[in-house]
Length: 497
Ligand code: ARG
Ligand code: ZN
Image (cartoon, rainbow, N blue to C red; front, side, top):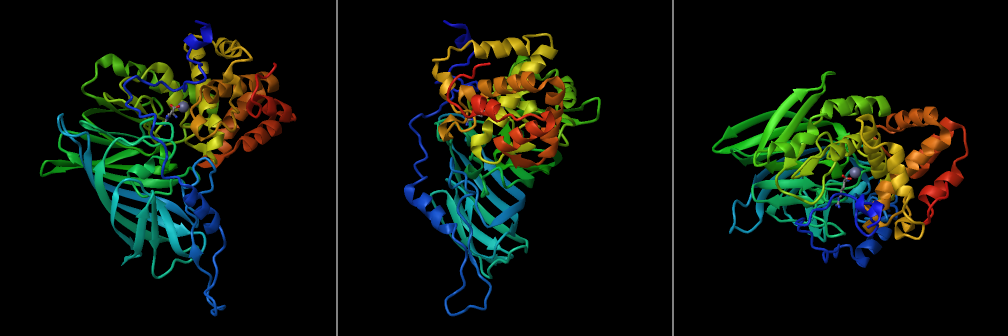
């Protein structure tokens, strides 16, 4: 076996740690992204028009059913911005076998939205669950709900710039949804709760949402579960209260967040709270059914935060922590302020998910094709953490990637446009990280260090593209880097150093 395979740099396999029992159904596809739906997007992009014979009235029209991301045409929506989600979710996990692996959810989502155009209709993304009612500014609104699109017709119509509250009451049975590649994601029902991991467009499996990173919002969560279980969401734990055998866990995420980073995982967790020496609250939720070594990789969390603050600037959010579940979705996810791990949090993965808080969570991809700026940075960050901690050096990691033969299909991924089914391809992670390492050699440690801090600072709580990154690197280094970025992220061939 050649060395790089042993290191997990394989091409056909995805880079994130998959487990054999992940339960992924590879035959599952996004059947609901139909050609008809795509055609709908094109037509809905057309500007709103006045009623015929009524030229004086303001023009109203429908918001687009998608945010315009070619990888996931119906993810997100047009015509408005969501500024806040208030999610009240009552959840009953399935309990032990032989009960079917299905939960029950009854919920109300209250969205604060600001129209960016005059709207007589708008969409939200919601899969699988059933909608009972939609209320806009206190008035019941008509709606349809097909193929993951909740189409709302508010009356009176909505004016650009005037914020409204939209209240959706919904619920039903929860299962184990899968993404376009067949990996478990979204609200993944487990025997004793749920592991909730939405990347890239799985938030719509559990609440009505504008499910694209370009529409970040703040969140409040009230998650009610049977007494004894713990529900863990993003941000700060505000309150927990129990009555009639049910406990409501209230969390608040005051930092704007992309929907793919939201979570409300439920399990038999022990909550452990502490603070870093700098006073940042740490809230970990560790499954009581796991052996202690499953969370041993969290031991250096505070040191890692201090190390990455030196590299990337101040930690971008107001708390941190981890969820380690004894169930598995087959991978870990950098859910905002509170990464979630399947069965075990290893030190390298903890460093990777922590680095995402700057690289991916604060600065998010404006289109999904720019995901290498998440995964390349997080992988590079775990390289420099390992080196800092006395392990393998970043140079050795880089050399392992460069040892992959030029004719290997690893080099055929276009890192800055890997395709919707290539989001988590090995090259997005490892060639992405090697790109950053090579850039550091190209522009020197000083300019690269400045870039590493300017990037998360300049695009904090926002989204950005590969072109934004190249431009910033050129500005800081004073160099034309077109040939460098073309060779490293835009060409399906091995770069020659
Ligand atoms: N962003 C995650 C990580 O790098 C991996 C998510 C994999 N998700 C998936 N749906 N296959 O840790
Ligand atoms: Zn990652």
